[in-house]
Length: 186
Image (cartoon, rainbow, N blue to C red):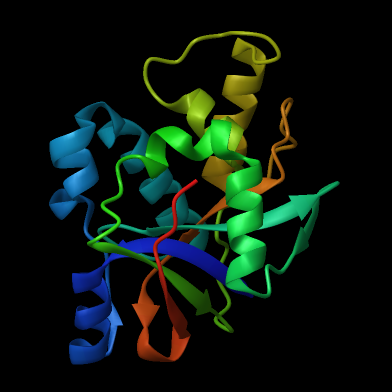
């Protein structure tokens, strides 16, 4: 399956030098410097990913793909990825503004490995970001169901589907890296 992720240039260097990038949330610039409130949510996602995949990773790579009516579809080109990101700019804009266009790149990655990427609609991920606010169409029932399903690696139908899925990857190996693209603005 092909996915898209935004990473720093040093991640690409690490992949080329070591053959692999293995994320570690304890070293995450985003959590440690930009939004420390996310550490509980990130830990929950990591614990769920590790549980579902029988792994013991220190972090996961956050990436994206698209879906419609619960069916995944592959974003074949950087233009396809740009189109869906720009189409969902109001959803992804807060995150996108934290990226440095001079230091971040878009990685096109592909995995043949057998693991559960713990899919979630980007709207649902953002709903779970602290402070959680129960605004329609979200409810405490959805929050509980979402957490249970994520813990089990089950995709939850979003009450507010965006068409943009957040996925979680265990690493990026040299063989996973299809292409490195320039970062783009919304």
